[in-house]
Each structure stands twice: as C-alpha cells, then as structure tokens.
Image 1: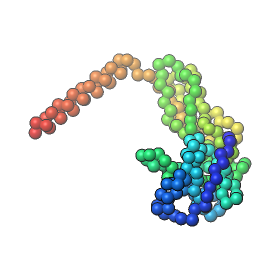
Image 2 (image 1 turned 90 degrees about the horizontal axis):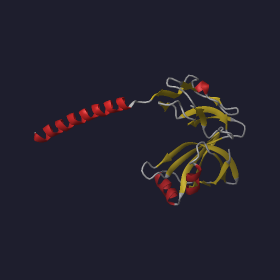
Image 3 (image 1 turned 180 degrees about the vertical axis):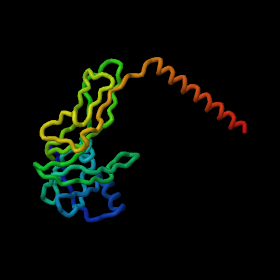
Length: 207
C-alpha cells in the first residue's frame, strides 16, 4: 500500500473555540499518539486529509516539526450534516509491526440461480503489517447453492494477514430467493395492514 504524506502544524490552542478557528482556516484538528509517546496535538490540511481518508486504513506519513511519523487513522469525527472533518485520531505505527484493523469484505462471482447473497459481516478484523494492510478481503460466492455459508475460517487471507476474530464468525449466508407468489402474498398482507391503519386514522379524525 502507498503512503500519503500530510504536512502538519503543531497546535498550541485547545478547546471548542480553537477547533472552530482551525476548521475555518481549512485545517483539521488531530492528535498523534502511540508507542508510549506523549500525545502530539496537530492540525492537518483540510482538503488533502479529506481526500486521503476516503481510502480505508490509509497509511499516512505525517510531517511535523521537521520529523516524519507513520500513522493510521483510528477515529475520524465528521459533521453529521455537512460531512466535513471535525477531528482525527492518528495511531503511530512502525514498519514491520502488525496492527489490528477492520477491513471491508467484498463478494465476487455469482451464486446459483434463485438465491440471495446475504453479507452478515461487511468488515472483518484482522492482524496485518502496518505497511501492507489489504484494501479489502474478497469472498467468492461463485456457484454457491442456497444453504451455503462462509465463515471467517474459510476466508483466503493475503500474505501474512491473520484473523483477529472468532473463526466461526458468519461472513456470508446464501438463501433461497423469494418467489413471485411469496412476494405477492407479502404485498397483500402489507396492503391489508395499510387499509387497517387508514380506517383507524379516519376514526381518529371523526373524534
């Protein structure tokens, strides 16, 4: 995986007011910690950081005060409405060390006809080298029949990546697709319920 370099500035002001001023300057408040070091409070370039964090488990090279630190984003706070970055926690990592990370699960292939593929675990926690974290774990469902299940222990993990979850964790479940008759029956039941609600509503208005 490639590294993305971000140039940070040390922060000397703290609190909500200081954080707002940092964000108005198109920067993101952040903290860099790990490996027994004291937390370092920094700010990051807003647009560059936003683009970098679109990639899951991105490896960042943080240049601050003349030194460079490798780090992984551990917690990212975003504004729930506008989506801009409010704060980022960065974990210092070393080349060659293993870290525990959540990696997206992606299905490939087509299951047998008239089946539905249910992904029970959209991410899975693994132990991986800090500099070689997989972007995703691919799971082939090619030709699988209804009733088939894929557990964590069945996954084909790349390189020296290992599971950091229960081996029996259900990842993918293949079930029978709903028939047209079942679909119409469900619609019929839904329609009856809707009529009952409508009648109740009319009664309430009359009261």
